[in-house]
Length: 55
Image (tube, rainbow, N blue to C red; front, top):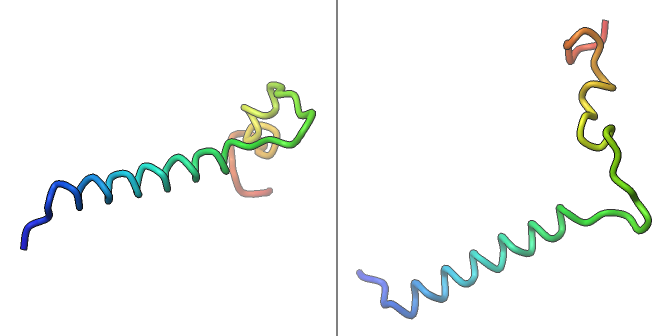
């Protein structure tokens, strides 16, 4: 069984749409939110001494 070129194009378009939709959904932010250093360094504020488990 071989896939026709049209089948491959449709599957790739479908996967691209899923990936793009998922990326847009994940990257959304709340209205008025401004990024700060804590947005990028959130693990540092939750861990003491570089450990992830509480003492």
